[in-house]
Image (cartoon, rainbow, N blue to C red; front, side):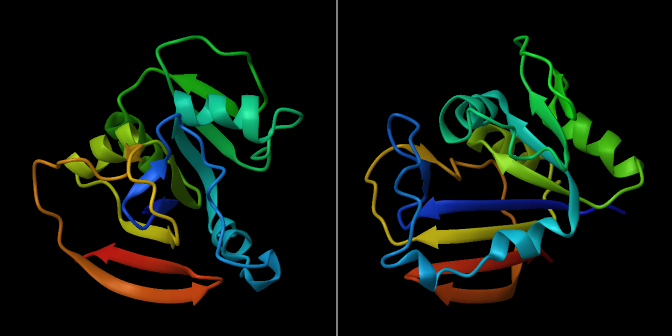
Length: 176
């Protein structure tokens, strides 16, 4: 069965975006030459991306307005609003858990939960995330959008791996 993987970065104090939704703080402590390319390694195992509408809009309006950076993948955007049609991008108003259950039944590689926090929270509540791949950035934001809000139930995880580079720490946890 396809695995559902949260692959995301957060500040040391647990935020995935600042108070204005910005992510320009997502970098290490030094020269980018010190960074590992963990993203390229990760995407070899996925073919589907799930994201919320705020994440989608941030990508197309701010981070990569000239081209869709995930064109090699099938992307599902959870939204109750209409968006411009793009190849390999499907906008749906299905609940994230229902969509994940449907996608798991189809053949393919793993499914990447790209963001945002609301999508992550809903999938956690349904215990549908198999792997938490979180990079901790050496920044304290103090406020913003938290990755993990108050959940309703405990989730036990097992540490599957760690790496550190350029002041960042990559943590990989799986359900136990």
